[in-house]
Length: 269
Image 1 (cartoon, rainbow, N blue to C red):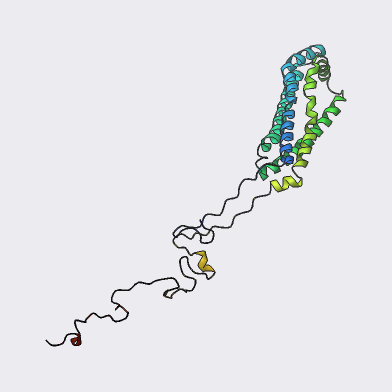
Image 2 (image 1 turned 90 degrees about the horizontal axis):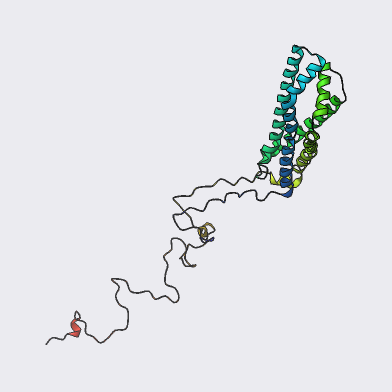
């Protein structure tokens, strides 16, 4: 297509080019994605210690009840409280991991909703983890409780292997990683990446008619002579040789041939 004349007659102008993708994500967005996914994996590590404690709880409770001569009602209450706490803790760990991992899947695609959810999940997970660490430290220093609870705590501390606590130790890095990811998602390169693309102007359909651009600014139409105007009949130009038209008499010098209709050229015999 010639840019000066447009598309051929009867064909519309090409559509406005649709905006392309956001391109390659900047380094802060890629780094934040990796940090959030790493924090989501670290959030699952406490499930190892929860699983170990859940599988050995009944045995520890039975021996503690024998040593303290606890009643059946106390044993039943401990079992119910342990199941509620274990279920709530497991749900909290899974929700925290999902809140960090799922939005991170759409960060590299430039989804602004995923960015907002990642920031909310990162801040929320950091606050909850810091609060959980504080409660755990406070509970470890308290020895109050019933005789059954104290005996269970002592048995668990003596019989739990060291690797159970070491496996959950890297989860302490969850809060720093999540906060760092949130900061990276708020820097200027990330803001430009998540900015919505410009909206293209509405396309005007010109199907069924077409005007050459050359006539828009008053120029001659394609194929017309520069000296002619619309409505004029083009005449002969320099270098052109118009031929005779039907009905025209030849123009030229007289010749010596007799005219059959002139009586002067035919004397009476």
